[in-house]
Image (cartoon, rainbow, N blue to C red):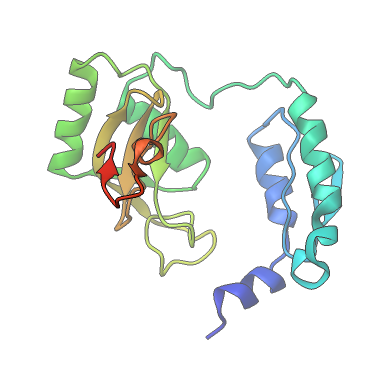
Amino acid sequence: MESDVEIAHSASPKPLDSIARKLNIPVKHIIPYGKHIAKIHSSYLVTDVRNRGGTGGLDTAQELIELCKWSGNFKYLYNLDAGIREKIETIARKIYGADGVSYSEDAVEGIKETERLGYGRLPVCIAKTHKSLSDNPSLLGRPKGFNITVHKVLPAAGAGFIVVVCGNILLMPGLPMNPLAERIDIDRQGRLAGI
């Protein structure tokens, strides 16, 4: 069985371009892809930091600086006024290629509560495995004939989006602008302050 690294190095970035064209995404993209040349909307880059160190990523870094200056006409894939289920199903079908979406009881309750709290118009952020476009990490790459299962839905009101949890995945905690750890101190006698 090939490792993830071997798969990444042997895979071609060409499907990324066809996906972007199929979705009619009107933005410029950079996809550093191992030592492969990535071509998306006329951007060509070779990233090889593994073998060349920092100099292997300078072209990518420079292109990222230029992209930060670029103002594209970003549009959501869905209408923000659409219901949470419609947003999830649009992403599942159009981006991941899923046949459908199923919801656990917790997810259904999470959707109801998120809408009751007035956060239903927020965009969704789907948390799932990075190994597959499905929510099943053993279905590598871009599988066909699968459904996505939503296990949990909760608002990240401060961040401004709805978290949709698919599959067995751990979420990272959010931090405030100034983490509380910055206030912790120790004096010369070894006493802690700020806890």
